[in-house]
Length: 165
Image (cartoon, rainbow, N blue to C red; front, side):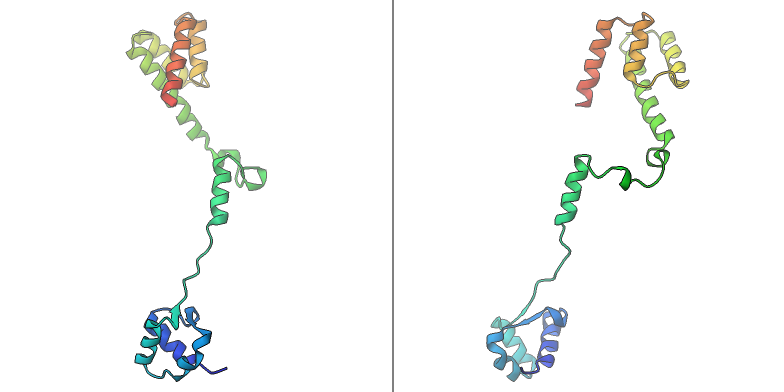
């Protein structure tokens, strides 16, 4: 086996890569061994006797699989969790999401004329006090109090589901 360290080094410099990425054709070892100038190495590169191997990267296959699983809601079990429930979904964040939904609902009811401004204010204050858990809960209270009819509530809920789709 001939020592091709010098040729490999020169080829790496010419190919602009590391020595380990230089591939030398085993059938033309004698030609490479006789190449002592950079010009000789350039000629061998143009003849594809010496080539640059493709850079090896990290496979994304496993990462893509994990991403698909997470999209389906997997990989969220107790063994994956770090931090308390309040750290993963802060109470304030939950509150903001809920109160914004309730206020949007009340605003749309007032603007459409289904409830009066005074009724709006009453339910707004109750919402602020944490009386309602969701839009549906708010609407069911309005039906119970006689502010809305059941048909109106169903119609509003249908509108809400169309908006979320």
